[in-house]
Length: 222
Image (spheres, rainbow, N blue to C red):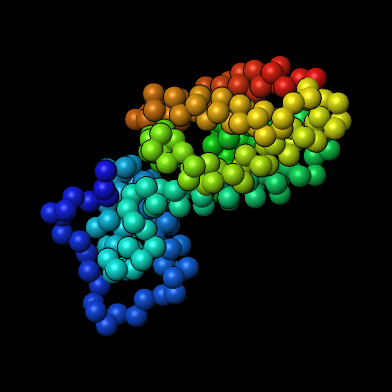
């Protein structure tokens, strides 16, 4: 599945237009992808729209991204990296590792990451990324796991700290982190896709966060 059909005209920039350095171009493309997902979901995310939004040339896009998969993986990588850093800064000083994990899980369910979006955009982008997460889990599992690794490592660290404190049952922290993440992600994906066209219901989401955490807490308890 490509971002644009072969027959779709692609936006061009003037041949002599100066373009920014590669890293800045990549950042602009990913930021444009965020905006387009907010505004129109996956249907609005085309190469033509990205180029129009950024003012970059088709060559500049393909120097960084082969197609939709690579662009979406970059969106996931940026989202996960920012979220993991946000959680680390917000909760790193909390002394209880199980409480740190609770806060991380709860914030993932509530959608409170490094740059949360509100209102209808929260569900629109979330649902689009949920669809792509499920697709990439099948078509590009290794690449998706690399993109998710900052958050997986952060979850595993809380579990390892909990084991050292005698609060979490002895097991592979990496394996438990995978189980926790998969439970949270699968439930959130289902919720977002089921209510894609509706505005987020804060009370429903808070109850869901509570229920998911209670399930996780009992599963990992020493």
